[in-house]
Length: 396
Image (cartoon, rainbow, N blue to C red; front, top):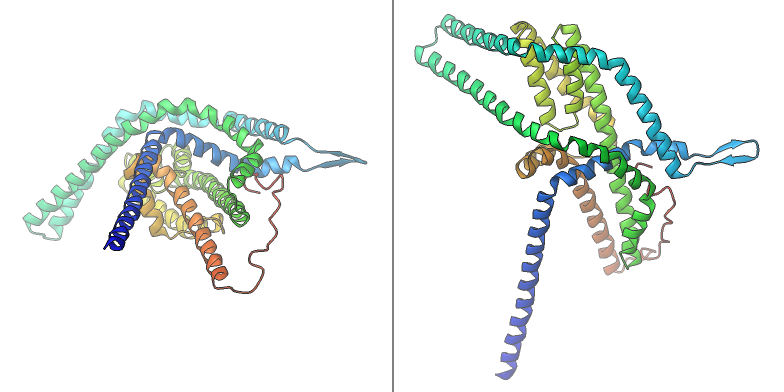
């Protein structure tokens, strides 16, 4: 009887410890999630710095390559190479702004001046579309109840889009107060590039086991490759979309092709939502010219979107991030529900890193299973990889 009582008390103690640990883990996760949500703007700033870091890393690596003059080797320190890259980027931006700035500013000023008239023209065009739909339905001899139902639904859809636009614009303007924070992006990226090696060594040393240390090193390399592939793919897509939209709208005869194309290129960096906003702006402005031109612009943007998502972008991203389109859509919708515009921006990189970590976890569990069953070989005797000075440079 005493033995059974001791067993029951021991079982109760074990289960109590398990429950307490689970509760502590849940509380810790809730606190971490709350902190991430409250610091989402700072997190976005850090992510932008990481993106910029990965973007210029290959140029920094190129500037670090030694030059040989006779028998002398000239090799720049990383901090000097980063500074020179910043100078080159600043010069390129200055020349680009001086070249394209006047044209874009002229179109933007004209667009701002004509905005009331464009809104009235767009409203008249929408009314003409509704009236044309009514005459078309009468021509098809649809019952009056059907015509009234379809007309009401079209009106509700237009009002719904207008209300969404009215709620989205204040949210978007609310983020403008963080615009000066962008000055910190190159500053943070400078330290990330310069001290990336020490960051990697510090993270790896936190793990005591040699096998786990190797796994941590490989995990960091895969995360770096994934983020580099995503960043360069997004930047390339932004430039490509901006150029194609500008040329396409210009050939169609849509108004303010330069401004809309530049805006489409910038919004391309925001997955799913950005291209949709750019399309709505382009179609809305073209509606002020003619309904026919708006339909041509709509068709052009649909074809461009299909080609971009299923032909061009997969070739750009290469072997970086491999995710099914359904996962991308779910991730973006989840990010929008959790953190709004910031969540949309961070959704795909976060899911990409989760996929990389999960794949490494499966690989590690597989190796541990092989060791547990006693598979012969040198599974546990691989030499620890050397962390070269360039290993931590993002994108190498």
